[in-house]
Image (cartoon, rainbow, N blue to C red):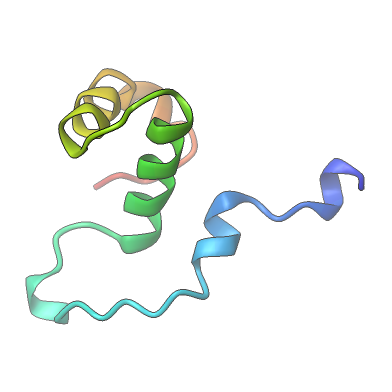
Length: 68
């Protein structure tokens, strides 16, 4: 399989329905899932570690995600 044939992580997650109430949503579900999976693949094991990883990598993540 060539690189062009592979969907991005965000493209895979975009088909997931967001069950959250629209008025209470602060962060995009697809972006949160991409960040969480990236952090776990980088060794994060808990929500606290995922948050710490995301905070440390925020500038890098913004190259690929909007992260409002």
